[in-house]
Length: 71
Image (cartoon, rainbow, N blue to C red; front, side, top):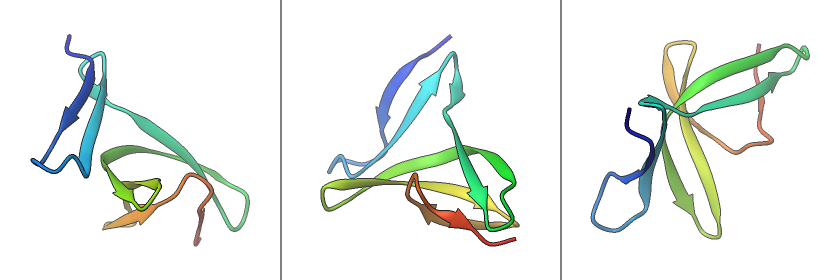
């Protein structure tokens, strides 16, 4: 199984993290307090921060780790 960090472009601004051959997961919360676990499509750099691109309700969105998702 492949694990580690893989860059998606030559600039190093987008990458994926593999854990035992699968993409890493992130847990977020909705406005109603429900927990949502999603696989991360890719991570990207945003200044000194990193965001995660996830699929939520049929759309690909960029989120930070403390983002509250709509219901």
